[in-house]
Image (cartoon, rainbow, N blue to C red; front, side):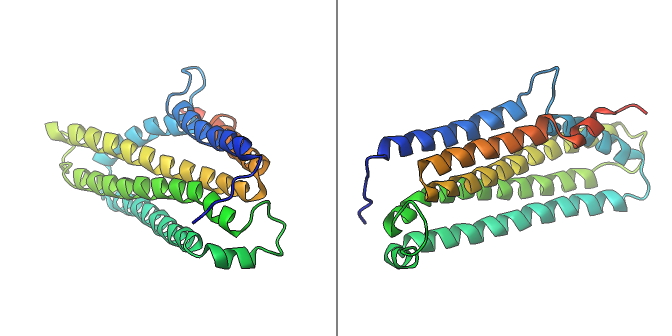
Length: 229
């Protein structure tokens, strides 16, 4: 398959580089925030540990089992959605001539073959999201097993130790889930490439700003900071 290269090819490469750089840097910043201004994802780690400490003394533990099952269902849903989207993208690439016919009357900056090429980063980011969701689903399963291994008696020496292990696995699962969500954000941004390199740049900047605002300047973050009444 021939993908035509126009005079804006260097700009396309720069825009794609900006997208990937912002994706990696925003993820690193969210997971390694400044100590004086923690991200929502980082703040939630303490709440997950609090959850597991409370879980030890809660009787019965039906609520906790329901909650961990809900988290697993969420990861399964996003994994399924990512898989379907990847299938659609691969089908699009495999039918470049059909796409060219369909896009002939649309105000896109690309022809059919270029549309197929521009879908590659979208599919790549969705593939990364799928792998992260699958791993998160498995980790939440490990967490549920550790929770089941917590003794019913809080005075048992293993009770809080097992709960602490469950909390750390829960945190690892949440990290993987959040990485998958960030990949979806930037997969949507990558669709801007269909409008040209400037569309890709705009999508990358918009996705980054939305992510960082929700992690560092959202109303929910202010609520999470109120740990004491």
